[in-house]
Amino acid sequence: MINYYKGIRTQGPVTVLVAAGVGNAVAIYQVSNLATMVGIKTYRLKRVKGLNAAGVNTLLHIGTGVGGTFADGIPALLTMNGLNFDFQEGDLPEVEFSADITAYPVVLGVTVQIEVEVIG
Amino acid sequence: MELYPCKSGLGLMEPIALIDHNVCLIQSTQRIYRRVVYFEPRPPFQFLNIGAIAAQTTSARTRASDLDLYDGEFGQYRWFVLDDVQMRLFVPQTTGKTVGKNLQIPYDMNVMSRDPDLHLTEFFQWEDKSAYFEAANVSDYGLTQCRLVAMGYRFITEELSAVVVNKIKAGTENCVKIPVAGSAGRMQ
Image 1 (spheres, rainbow over the protein chains, first blue to last red):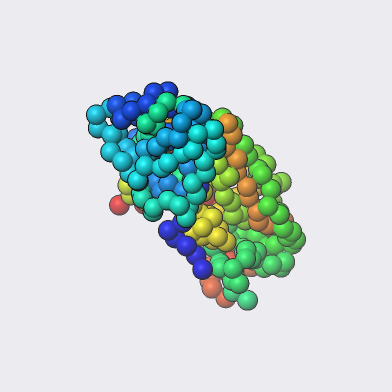
Image 2: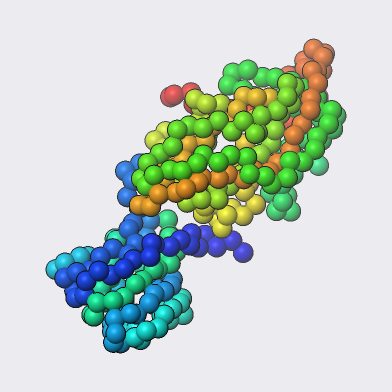
């Protein structure tokens, strides 16, 4: 059966979250916005992989917006100190993002990379 | 056996014509009448790598010379892209395929899930009147390569006599009509 709704699976860069706190959210996946692009693309979060080297367990917030405009897109993820984390499709809600996906840790020391399904 | 472009058949690609079939290759306003004397498959192969494309930029229109054929031959191709771009097809260089009044529809990686047998990617090429490809990296991330894979058939043909051509034009002789170039339309 042909699945017309299936998208392209791709990934963002390995991103070191260089500062903690909601005011310091940075992009972990930037959306496509070439002026000549045909169609509009949206992004379903499919996997969140990373490392907590913060020295303590900490929450990782993923959403959209930076600085004062950050809004959670999914509930915060608890990451364990000194361990890799790997939240996969079954762990994540079927949220569809249409703007740059951003993130911040509550405590400094988290590196993250995400996979998304590009719908469009 | 009915043969026509973009045919789905059992899902797999079928040759547009068989040996001894008459074909009419339509190239702009020109019609080239030929008879197929031989054909063979061209299995899936990587025929073009446009190369690195920076984020949010469009590549040069690039000739796909590996699809070219000898004189008197035409090719039937289906194709897809391996990398995350929006790809426009031109056959020949200045004539876009899949054009409408306001939009030339690009192909992208979605074709593999939405048209798995690649029916609607099918195009034909006469001799070395090459296809050209233009890739837009619409993403915010650079690409290190932009690869395309094609498959299809190569047909060797011979000229038809005027008598047969006249019969085809009169509708008394069978002939498969095949567009081997894009069309700008009639601009109405």
